[in-house]
Length: 195
Image 1 (cartoon, rainbow, N blue to C red):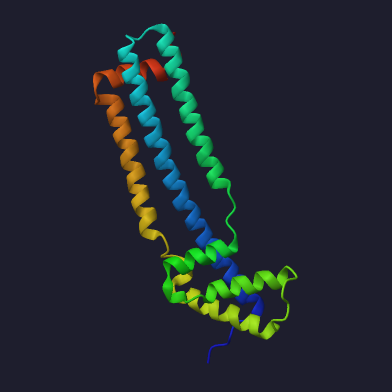
Image 2: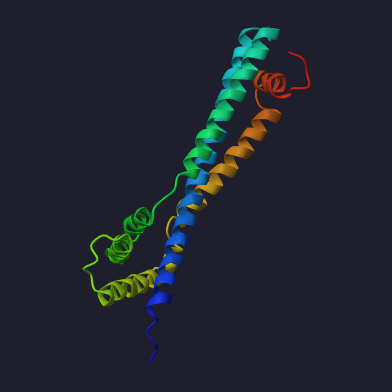
């Protein structure tokens, strides 16, 4: 007969599951933000190149569009970093798991909720044995879903492929794309040249 894990190891296993799911969620958000940054930068470069063509590559337009492109790129990267730095609570991770794996049936959410509130000095009227049992049930459910390894797996895979395709498309456009885009990108991105 298998031995039931002790309360401390069950709690640690639950913490590990939450950490693992949080990392996958963060990876998904990072890839999504990367897609937005690449698309936004490419769109800014496209519009600036078109603007340079319209203004016949005058020195003032080259300088102005250079500044605009770098400001847009910096703003996109800053928004991406700020979004990534936002802390996700254990409760939000538990809700995320519940949303993506209905088979967990609120076991994880209940264990995280009660474990969190009693540690904060909230309603401590829950007997420790009940709390330990809820943690063990949550760990059992987490084991059934392999610790959350499958959560967002397809989304991460899709976003990785999309980001790779976008970067390859951007590189291809800059090398063999329309002439105005190649000339504009050269004028905007090669800073060693004078405007």
